[in-house]
Length: 497
Image (cartoon, rainbow, N blue to C red; front, side):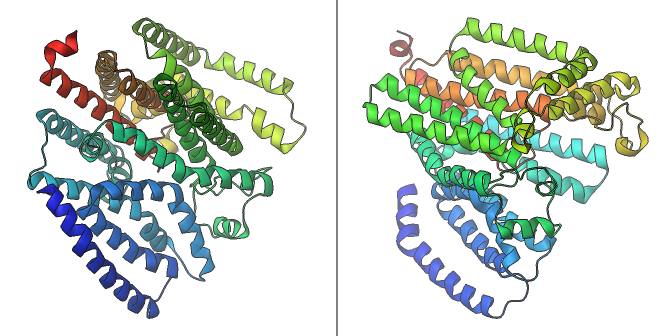
């Protein structure tokens, strides 16, 4: 049934839709008013939604492409004389619309006979409960229905990838092919970061920043030296994405060593890792450097139970020390920063430690405001009504949850994270085949690195395309685990041996 649907869609439906959409596009654009880029994106988005309904798997590659270049398309709007927030929404809305099209396309395929396991159904229900929890949390903290819908859509629209990836990928071997495709898509992103690092932002990018229709790029022109967002929405996003690619590159290299592939292929993989690593450096954003460092380390630590236990013990102990000694660490950071080279704007950006100081100040604020440690959250406007010791308030995810959801919400989130990590580690350690274990460890390293970075630097789950990569990694890990369970059920005796 699925093969027939695929053949019919490729031979007849897609070509017919292409002709109709092209004709409508030419007619509509010739008489359109408003920004030409957003006008084009309306029809492109509609066409991609139809493609996602008919062919969800190729549409996911399109989604990855949008992750890399959608923000660059948004900046192109300055070549037309007129654009506003609505035009920006129309452009940036392409990615979530394609994602929803993929989900609906897979639902249609399941209804037409594609197999789905009981565990996938349970995961789907869990994701649904998670989405409801996000909606409830945001509404409780803002009391605004429209703001809740917009905020939750930005965060939650990619969470279903946890289940969707196991339906899109028919075998574990396709994970490796997907990663190679992602490498190729993001290579120009890294190269454009080099260009911006050397020559600065292009004139049209500066013009877009000066338009005032941006939040993440707004401080670029007032900085001593322009930072590099490349084709993404900020230098923070660039460094995080490059870190993900470095971690996946490590996994690809370990797989090649395990399979004994020729040296030339391994050299190309090493070159890719260096390219992405330098792309992250060009951003001059330390959060991604932290994720890359932790992720690469965990790619080797998470392969053994003893190493894993020692790492978590050290991480919890270190985080507690940082929180309890935040005041002393602020003084220490001032001293260290005064000893580091700062003769040029570039050196000051590389060795500046103020970003870590801001996070520590958030910890101090939280420790000195005991009335913020409520049972169910401080629902008033914290920004205006609270008197903090430092202006930075709080930056990390856990402190934000504590303020708006209280101790109950924080404990619930921590329990979910702990239980989730325990289950994932247990299933990864049960993997018998070396290749899927390498990929599983890589994806698990990405998940933990993202959570750890959010605990220190602020939430990355709200930022596109970081959230796509996070939930894609979770979905690929689920795919590997489900395939392993399927093998165990089919060959229980042989597998145990």
